[in-house]
Length: 489
Image 1 (tube, rainbow, N blue to C red):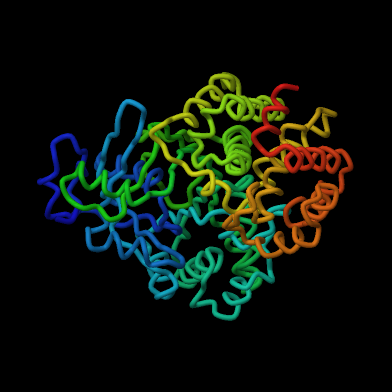
Image 2: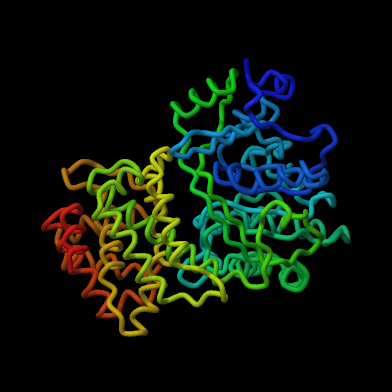
């Protein structure tokens, strides 16, 4: 038996289910990037809003490329389970906020139509850093990106997130409709402002008037999102289906903790997000930097160095006290670069992160977190390193994390086995690694010269010295011993 609308009343009593009549809902949100994170985070918040009687805020999800999510969810009426895992047990909740889904590559015109519908007042995104077709170091649109070139030549059949947003906003402008709010939920620096710049620059290439109209009328609130959502494995699907007493083809796994901070600036209204636990603020930047430099930076350090040391998951990596101390030290050294609002307890936040990383029920793979590092390093590690250098503070801990990334993208682990590196620059990075060979004094400068990742910071002699030394230790000692040696100093 498959999870679906007709079978909700057959679920065991302990399983939470939609506390509303889904037949009375209307879509008010289109979400681009229908991945596990959105379904475990924003969609859960909207599910709470719908349960509170806000029936005009259902979600239409869009996968920009793969049909897998649509193919799994459509036969079960777009219902799915969120499994919240903690050491003491797992809670299951069936989410009903997702009303329909679209695969953009199959039918781009249909997605533009849904976004241009006047009932849609928010377009949200989780397309990962690489999905914005931008240069991370500058935050500007990458005008020669293949998808950007395609979308400018095919404005009514776009491929990219900026292309779809511009196409739908152009349609609404032509029809005299209010624009929707663009709500980025990805880990970009100043994500709202960055996406506004990217979309405005793209639109201006289509039409200067369209670019100006978007800049003048469309709200792009900045946000900070936080919830750990590992990849769903086949064993997870089997466990969830056993708990439900019926098959769920596409559940998501997550942790009890969740946080969403949003700049309260919307073009055409919003649901009562505060009642669902969202923090609505006037300035998100301090919270965004807190998360990027404490959680995401230490997560990346654990991912690269933990993978090299043979650890499959973050929780497994945290069982090694040297790696647990490494994560704590990354946070400690980044904390001095932050200026937080009064009342923020950074020590308590850091302690909560270490507990979350160590959650034995959460199987968050180091390989999964290591993906797309060339897009993530500038926000997660390099910004804090730059700030510490400006304060004449040492950067050795962060340099070890960057060196871990460099060792990882050579695509060969410490035993000589191939690493499946998933990164937009994987080919370029591998070519540089082959040319330099496994010699830190050659490899570190070669990779630091990749301007798309390091920008001018890659030329700083203090950074070059620290990263080269750390990479040399990784080659000489291996990740496990290099981390232990670093923590002991």
